[in-house]
Amino acid sequence: MANPEFYRFPDSFRWGCATAAYQVEGGAREGGRGPSIWDTFSHKPGTTYNGETGDVADDHYHRYREDIQLLSDLGAKIYRLSISWPRIFPEGTGKPNQAGVDFYLRVLDELRAKNIEPFCTLFHWDLPQALQDRYKGWQSRETAKAFADYAGYIAGRLSNRVRNFFTMNEFSSFIDLGYRDGKFAPGLKLDPAELNQTRHNAVLAHGLAVQAIRANTRSGTKVGLAENYIIGTPIIESEEHIKASVLATRVLNAPYLTVIMEGQYLEQYLQQQGAAAPKFTPEDLKIISAPLDLLGINVYNPTYIRADSGPAQFAVVPLPSSYPHMASPWLNIGPEGLYWGVRHPAEIWNVKDIYVTENGCSSADTVAPDGNVYDADRVMFLRNYLINLHRAASEGFPVHGYFVWSLMDNFEWADGYNLRFGIYYVDYKTQRRIPKMSAHFYKEVIRRNSVV
Ligand code: GBH
Image 1 (tube, rainbow, N blue to C red):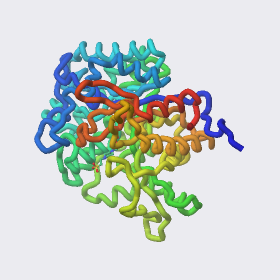
Image 2 (tube, rainbow, N blue to C red):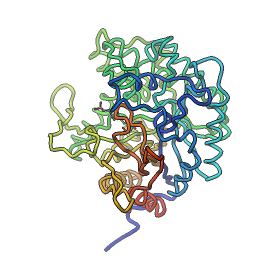
Image 3 (cartoon, protein in one colour):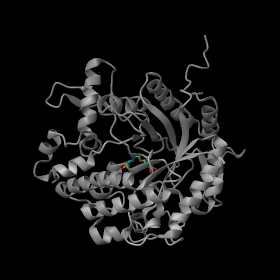
């Protein structure tokens, strides 16, 4: 018998959208903002699709009112935005820039007027260029200290309007792609020892920032981080493969989420890295692993795991070339990731408050002659991931909110404006926003609090 209530979420569940400063704001040289490593990187020939940059992006710096209205039209109750460090400290440290703070105060006041609760990410990859020049960015502990100073300052200034803060967005993206593969700013290819130390400085920065945020904000403030951690997804849901997926999740995330949650680098990681292992003190580990109030998970592509009889006890299942993906070649479709993405941290590390801080996909969107954008593949993608999210919530795992990536098409890093992740289409010539079919879908999900 049909049961339209089957996919209903708990009444307290909250729906929203996410964006990030450099991807949407533009206004790169306005309001006293200093340059970030992404300004430098994207302006260097050959780094991004067509040489595209975030100079203008969605012009959200000037159009934030209109964009918050889009959120309101969807019925969103939460919004995840990031704060641009170089708007607050143009030189990375030193004298704060009041005009930068004022911009975010205006955004937050507009959100409050629409009854939308903000979740602020303090670092979504736009490191002040000055810190790259002065300290080689995350290669130095000095940058970790500078981050804590910035985080404490800005969280304090926003504290009467913001209850939830995430320190970092996706360690593995900005460190491994930026300092190992050279695909993201600052475009470096460090050797393993330097890389591991850089990774360590980044998790240390997170820990120092947690302390600084707590010291400077009102009581009731919640602090966490947002990570697209590697979600070990059992290829078959049998006991042996589930066990292997738990082990894999701990091991594959050793430099980031595992050390943050466990307060220790796994022995395997240290041994495997040998002389290239990071140098650290017991005090560092204590700072890194400060208990958190929130965990944000960014969920995209699956990593399937099987049990194995070798010493590791697990193996990553290679994907055949026929495996389906979205417009981004890396975005393999694995809806179960949203179930295991929630379940693993709850079971492995006893995490009590999880938000899906990003989930969404790229599509080859076009505007049809009738003016609509029929992104049927994005609707398919979201529906299937949400069914898995519902499974996690209905089994009692502590997931309390969900943010679509993204509210609107935006600067997709090295892919420039070529790949579109929005549920609103952006016509970059006119800056007009058009709700895609997926926006209509999501609005109905929110209205009914159910997968539809
Ligand atoms: C998120 O990263 C980001 O937080 C967000 O800013 C971004 O817009 C969104 O996803 C969509 O990409 O080019 O083969 O080297 C998701 C994790 C890490 C996935 C980097 C793509 C590059 C793969 N991303 N990865 S490749």
